Amino acid sequence: MTATTTAKTTAAMAAFVKETGGWVAGQLEACTRCGLCAEACHFYQALGNPEYAPVWKLEPLRKAYAQRFTVIGRLKRALHWEKSVSDADLAHWSTLVYEACTVCNKCAMVCPMGIQIGPLIHEVRTAMSAAGVVPADLLAAARKQEEVGSPLGVTETAWRERLDWIAEEWEVEIPVDKPGADTLAVFTSIELMKFPENLAAVATILNKAGESWTVSSPGREVVNFGYFESNERRTKLFLGRVFDAAKALGVKRIMISECGHAYEAFRWTAPNIMDVPPGLTVTHIVRVIYDLWKAGRIKLKAGAYADAPITFHDSCKIQRRGGHIKEPREILKILAGDSFREMDPCREQSMCCCGGGGVISIQEADPLRFAVFGMKIDQMKANGAQSVCMVCSNCRLQFTEGVAHFGFEVKVRGLTEMVAKALV
Ligand code: SF4
Ligand code: SF4
Picture 1 (cartoon, protein in one colour):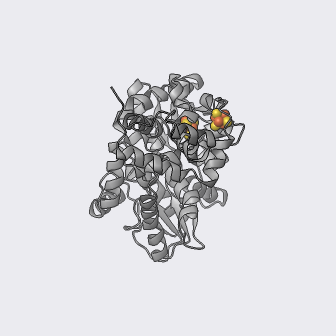
Picture 2: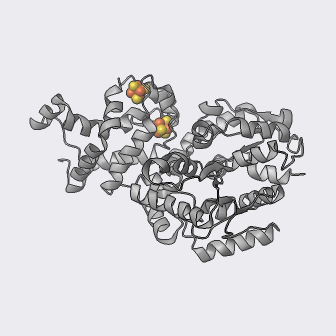
Picture 3: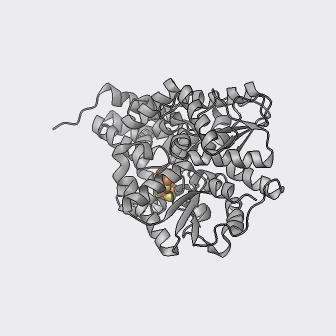
């Protein structure tokens, strides 16, 4: 049977060519195809499938670049020596970059040529998005976020009702749309709906410290499915909603609660693709908690969690990218003392839990993300932890579902809630 190449695939190849200018071309030219990055990728480590090698996930970009910009590539194309990319090839690559990559960028740490594979994967996803070859679940979430303001379909009314319920249930004040507050706290729908105790914990800590803060109805969603999709229009739209809300309220800083990719999008992507309100800083809840504790504005009960071994999962975007490695550890040393145990690997070398990059939202990818998570189970078995904590709600969802999938007995906790419960 002959492979079909329709206009959609031709459009995708044109989009790949568009993505291969300047910086991308330099990165593709620098790759020696040594294959070292494969061993750093958790998908390849867990399953040994050569298609999960990071460099292979960039292949459509390389093909488009070679055919358009190299002499040999042009010659092969003119003489029809190189097989065209078919619809089936494109669909297959789409699953590789959206379902078998969490854009964790650990592979870039081992590349001897310094190639930034994670950002290049985003370029591949951009072309896939332009050609309309995006997994249905992820695209549906992005569209829902565009239409309703939340990928889970949480409307403004539902959001307000949920906040009121959290405030009542945990007996905590949550200021809404308060002009002139210093800090705008932004949460994900995942936290709001699946981990409401986390939102209550953030409110408890900020109130205890006497922080001037607020949440915002128009800027209520911090996750960015446009970013997972790599659709620049949607990415800017979702970032812009929060920046506009921050501007309207006159806050000094945006505090990202527990979403690693949102933190990356606000801190590093936004300044490169759009105007960010001047003077506005972006910070993460783990840094805020640390600073409040260091300044003596909150006090922690020493040994509050020292009764059983506990470990910490380093998130790719908050610890490896964001550098917030010492903050959770210093806090855990107070809360858990000698009961704190590192996972191996940890810190910037930590293995991705396999929930990020939008992978967790794609049902078809479930068997893959659980298979990879098996390695995380092994790491917890090895250090004997009875509980594991983290500062990313996306990781927390993956851990909660992952340990249930394997029937593994470990308590999954959010560090923010641990801190709120240990306040004195
Ligand atoms: S480690 Fe770097 S140079 Fe080697 S194959 Fe991977 S991307 Fe290319
Ligand atoms: S970014 Fe992470 S998941 Fe993607 S290829 Fe690299 S190591 Fe693998």
